[in-house]
Length: 301
Image 1 (cartoon, rainbow, N blue to C red):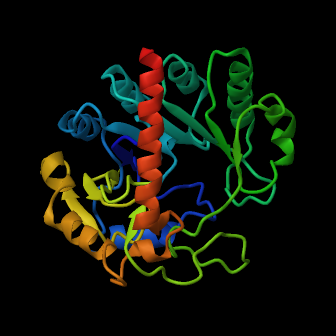
Image 2 (image 1 turned 180 degrees about the vertical axis):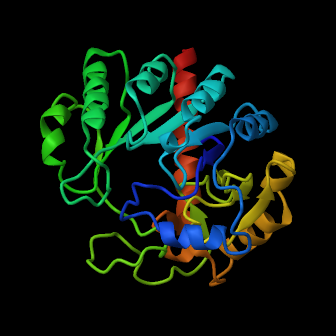
């Protein structure tokens, strides 16, 4: 699995999904400086992309709907035109038809559609503009001019989009809601959560085991170690003022890896659905590498 930078283009998301701990993120981000940079500028985005190795994928997801930043489409175009693999996760809020027409011209690595649900677990406004863009995406997926990788909907589809979604029956649908490693207070019992802290050495199935190289970038350049760290407990540094290499292999990450390898050191991973016993991860990794080597041999035959 490739290294990734998951970009938060803005702090404070209007969608305020049930499964995103927005209050926690905002309180921690502005705790020491209420005037801290809340919107990622295009210039700072370019600086950070240019400072990272070419194999690092650029992901538009983070702690906010990407298209709530007015420069989002320019950022996506910049990364894609620089030859980066680009992943886009979007609720479509803030995406206009013009944005979509520009987006569909790009070669995206992944496009995940977060769809509106009838219970408003994801508080996506179902407006005329939303329906128009959604229908265009569905039609283009159907005719092969655009590709939806996955649909994320947390419940049944909103009544107003049911007919549109019938146009894309081949797209995998994810419905489960996770509690962001214990960062969400779920009073209604609809999220999947880890009931007891995990013991023993752990690896992350989402962040390449102990490499931990799928990192969050916040609007001011702050780099977090983990996409689940909405409480900002593990800050690696700032990509605008430090090198990607120093942040990726610095003392903070090294110390965290040591805690992951311990029996019960207090870390976020012990309450996260994505962590698994280190020995289990290593066996799965070895099996995957073996399968890949067989495929290569057969390809040469």
